[in-house]
Picture 1: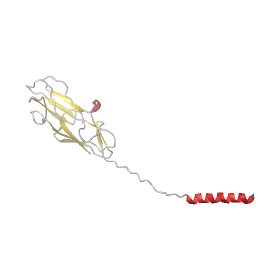
Picture 2: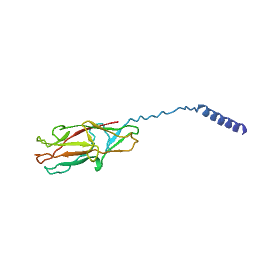
Picture 3: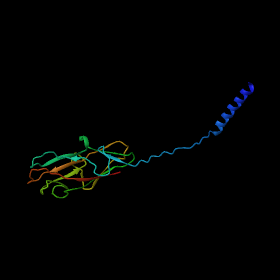
Picture 4: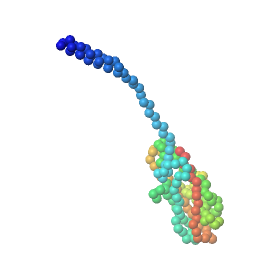
Length: 177
């Protein structure tokens, strides 16, 4: 019986050696990459065109008003908000409007669609002492990845002979970073 056990033992060892001889391994790496590009959000929204920079609402005034102040408000009723990638320098350019230079008393104008215009201008301060020219820029501090507030104000100026109605303008805005 011993020869039979020895044969079984040798067969088991041989089988184990064959199994080990057939096992092999290969090693290597996986290379993972991610490329981030600089980006910005305006009032919490991303995009490259058609972004809503906010609204300047002078409210409801009597046709014989003298001045009407307003502030550009972004989404949620707060001031315009710009959030850019860390390390970028955001620059907001307030471009041309649809009715620029159509009325004495301001560089810009609101129109009623019937040939009547209300002059107005943009300002970088609430006291309306620092006007922002057409194509003027507001340079923000270098971004740290936290949203920055852009305070932009408007002042509409009344003039004689304005009929009642809704007066509007559309102003182009560009954000570079």
